[in-house]
Image (tube, rainbow, N blue to C red; front, side, top):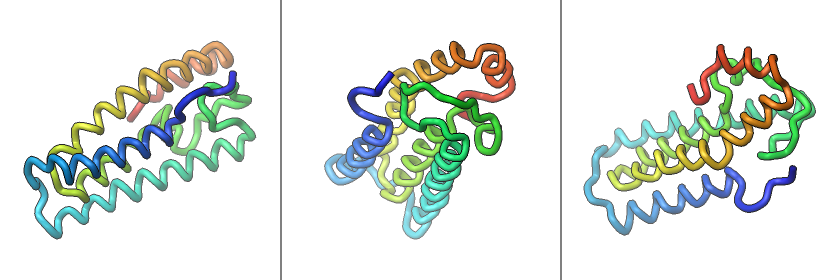
Length: 149
């Protein structure tokens, strides 16, 4: 099945833009003083690294990274031992890093909205497809590995 509409990366970009817009339009209060906001670099870099590692695992397994396309392999090693959805986890870490960097309170409202959207629009459907395709192998993996972390 081919994906139609917005991809997770589009939602990430929209979320980043919304966070920056909220920071400037409705900053409410600065909650992290300078230079402590620079600690936001850590989750940002970690999120990017997790995504790169997970993407590489998809390519090494010769399976698709695109949502709603049929997978040819079930990846359960590397970052997939910690999370069944490390790329979405990486996206959330990127948003947390940006929220810390911009220092205002209002951008944090975007993070749970993003996580819920990823869960409902992508993760639930993708995991249902994997369960249908990989059966018992998926069920064993699902039992021992959490959806997010």
